[in-house]
Image (cartoon, rainbow, N blue to C red; front, side, top):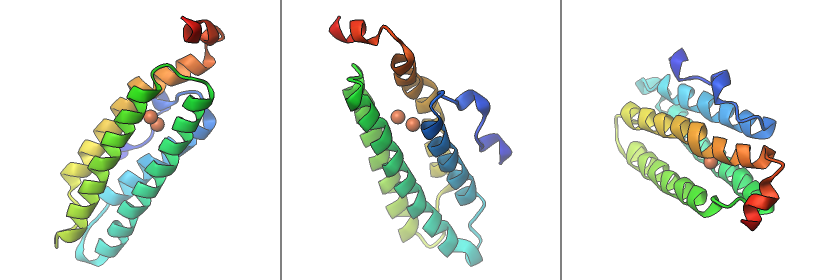
Length: 139
Ligand SMILES: [Fe+2]
Ligand SMILES: [Fe+2]
């Protein structure tokens, strides 16, 4: 389970973003810690919490991208939308099922998140820290 946690290599160099990413990873680990019949309610609550954390996180990233006129913003936002829809779908299916949350689906979400951070999130972070970004925008 520790393999699924936050790693330093996931850092994008923006502390507010790293903090939110960590919380999302912690939440995913907490979901995968269950469910036995006893903690089904806890896991369901954690899935709802995950949705809230994602919503908050995507809102932060998207508002930064807007402010800094990030050129790949639309593509990035579309990735967020697609993932958000998948997690909502997963949550609805999981909450309807008697057996609780699908660990396979949560692991897929974990993989998506890791890949997204290591590619798309890194791209905007590099753009934000690039002092030449204005010329990129103009170009
Ligand atoms: Fe992110
Ligand atoms: Fe993102």
